[in-house]
Amino acid sequence: AARLLLEGGYEIDIVFTSRLKRAIRSTYLVIQEFGQVYLPVFKSWRLNERMYGALTGLSKKETAEQLGAELVQSWRGSLNSRPPPLSPKDHFWPGRLRQYYDLDASEIPLTESLNDCMIRTRPVWENKISYQLLMGRNVMVVAHANTLRGLVKTIDGIGDEEIQEVSIPTGIPIIYKFDKSLKPIPPTATHSASQQHMSGQFLEKPGVLKEALKREEEWGSRVPGYDFTMNRPQTPLTSLERSLIKLKAERELGEWAKEFVDFEKLALEDDGNDGNMGRPIEFIEDQIWEEALRDLGKGSSTLDVVKAKADIIQTKPNNTLNQPLMIKDGDEGNNKDGMT
Image (cartoon, rainbow, N blue to C red):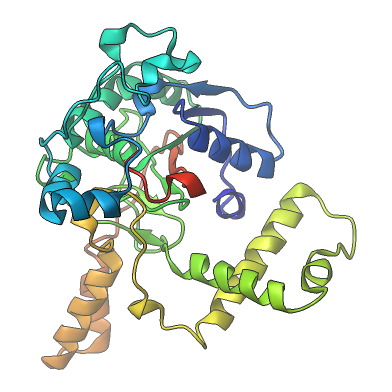
């Protein structure tokens, strides 16, 4: 994520994240790669991931087997359905932890629907983030799938039904640009990828790079001296040069991996994102390309079809105020199959 931001020339002035360790660690990884660990970081409980109540700490797979996959999916995917509440006497009640000592017990949710979680994030935008943007600062938010969806819902004015079709991938920066009245500016056709209902721009499509890095790790474990040879510095480098070289190598690795892996057929890993009811993200550019191919089959010329479809997402951003961005935290190993 940090390397993609550096490549795009983005700068960070201030960071907002949650009070969960995985988000805080993800934040530090980004600002460390930038060489700017001194940046102000504000941690808000309102950016914590959704509270799954009595399901907290349980395995999604085992819970689905015991209670039924349909019931568990309704709790995860429904906008207003809440799982059974957590008891304040329960081991997993957050009020036991020091990072929440400044909160009244009534502020700590015992269970939440998706809508409850998204509503919880709204004051962060209205009272904190929007103020920083109006001051001309570039804001980075590192949080979790459902709380980021809450921010996106507020920013883009997305309806209750439409927000259920929005997904937030792990570790892929989403760039939002605003005009002087804090209205989001839609991305142009030259940008990497955009999702239906959102004005934010993905800096890279998720999936390919992750699988390529996984295969490089397997390769390195089989070839003696591989890591030393690949990581040996040839000449002194600045932190920016080092990051961009690593990003270039990762992309080349992705191109190499395409010769051996059919990424279109890869099963997507369930990372806990309740968005789009577990279905893959549908990018606007993909939809436009598919429509263009259908039109070509009907006899339209290539130039007319491509121009007509491209016009759908082309805009001319004027008076851009700033460039805030969002990143979903990297999931920890011990949280991979959990409900939190």
